[in-house]
Amino acid sequence: MTSPDLPAHISASLAARLHGVSRSDAAQRSDTISKTYRAGGGSTTIRTESDALAYALARMPATYAAVIASLNALQEIRPDFAPTSLLDCGAGPGTATWACAEAFETLESFALLDANPALRSLAIELARENDRTITYTLGDAPTKIIDAPSADLVIASYVINELADTAREKLVAAMWSKTNDTLVIVEPGTPAGYARILDARTQLIRAGAHVIAPCPHDETCPLLKPDWCHFSQRLQRSRVHKQLKSAELPYEDEKFIYLAVSRTPIAPRPSRVLAQPITTKIAITAKLCTTNGIIAAVAPKRDKALYSKFRKLDWGDAVFEHPSSE
Ligand SMILES: C[S@@+](CC[C@H](N)C(=O)[O-])C[C@H]1O[C@@H](n2cnc3c(N)ncnc32)[C@H](O)[C@@H]1O
Image (cartoon, rainbow, N blue to C red; front, side):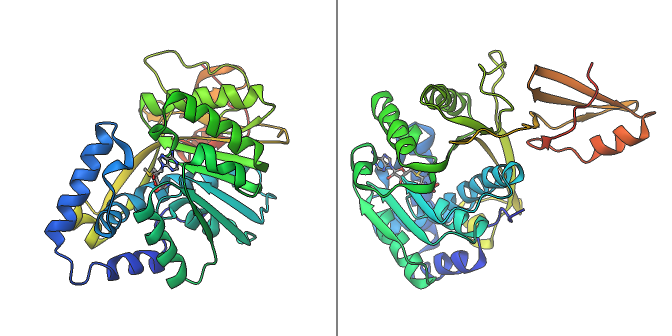
């Protein structure tokens, strides 16, 4: 399992850029960027070097953690997957590229694509400082991706939420056409993020893709509204991170949703824990998505072996053995 915390060398490169920069100015910028994101405005307010740095300091640790959690889930199911090429669409400061490089030592080539010049410049500097060779194309992803190389692993992290419906569909189709093996899409863990992932999932299955994670099947999602599928990844906050977010806690929990699809079907496909299991005096109950739909799997305390297995279960875990159900 790869650590969800941003590698120390990347954090150090980012922190070094803060020398001589007013913390309150950086905090103000990151606050404006966060507010714009929450209002659905996307990355449009990131225009300058200082904006790009503020974004990276405030958000890169959390999106990195969400990407690592998604890649860990993928690797648990495909431990033999050894991609050599990566295409990172809507790469921003290179967050997913760094996450993929940490998770897959086999990666040799890194192609990045994004429309934001300030984030691209920051990514190029981070790569230069940290001895990573990348090619980074500037432009509109749904259009420019046509010229991108195909790759064993294609990824889009926190990107498709910034696109209008037609552009999103176009990008998802184009990303799949550039995928030699596996495509991963990561989105914020909100009902809207879940809805976008479901749309992409339907589109990709129609195009011949096989779901690897988080779903144990390629059928219609069995969750009923207002329920929605999402996961949570805890990450440590650095001192700078806390300062910029005016936060007290030494950690934060990033809610996210992801989809990993492949050209090759996987069997057997594990069930997925959809919420933190609930422990009472007499049993542990885990909400599972299985090949037979959603079940509440129960491990009574008196069943010592099953109970001890359930004690280790966390939200988001894959469950390979079929447990008992209510
Ligand atoms: C929230 S940021 C995520 C950046 C990075 N993937 C990460 O996880 O930190 C969204 C990124 O999508 C990019 N983006 C949005 N619309 C785009 C488009 N039409 N073409 C290319 N990039 C786009 C933005 O410039 C920004 O870098």
